[in-house]
Length: 238
Figure 1 (cartoon, rainbow, N blue to C red):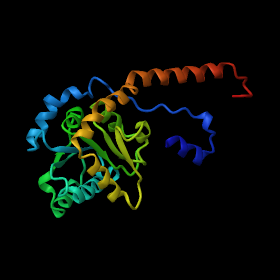
Figure 2: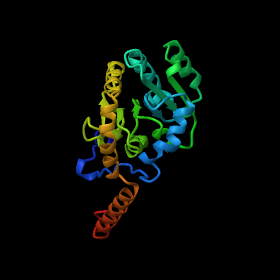
Figure 3: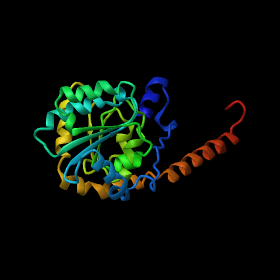
Figure 4: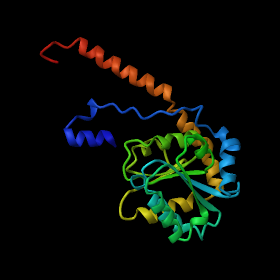
């Protein structure tokens, strides 16, 4: 997504840009946290193992689309009584979103966790990541959620959606006028525990292709390749 933007704005040819996706700490973000820290956060919120918990994790709620999450969830909360939502992150206007939940009659099913330093535990407490961000070059939480064994619902304005191979591990929702009904549809479809369970191992396998060490190696190799090319250029070429 960012490559296309650079090509369009600066007339750079595609073969002059190499994309290296963000990497993830595969030890920090792991399904193994579900039975410990994740289960504790879930209990503290009053959510049970039988609930299907959608988790949002991010800072800057307006850009990241918390209002969209709440609006979409309000459309499915009665039809999917086992569904719940975690909102984790910092925002100076959090009261606005809490009021939105109250106005929609879903405040008893939505837990605002506030600013957290244990992102790995917050993800482990949920079942599905939902991130309808209005713009993100690559939201790190996309691959962090996959590493934690969570399928992902995100927007096509999150560059991170490009690592989702197909709908076995998530759903990409087009950002536009129909975002709320489309997001509601995706959340309803991902409220199926059987589908979630089938996605867990596949999500982790996708994340394992994006370990942070491999991304650092790729970046170093790219720098070395560019440096090597420049050594053989004449001053006029440079």
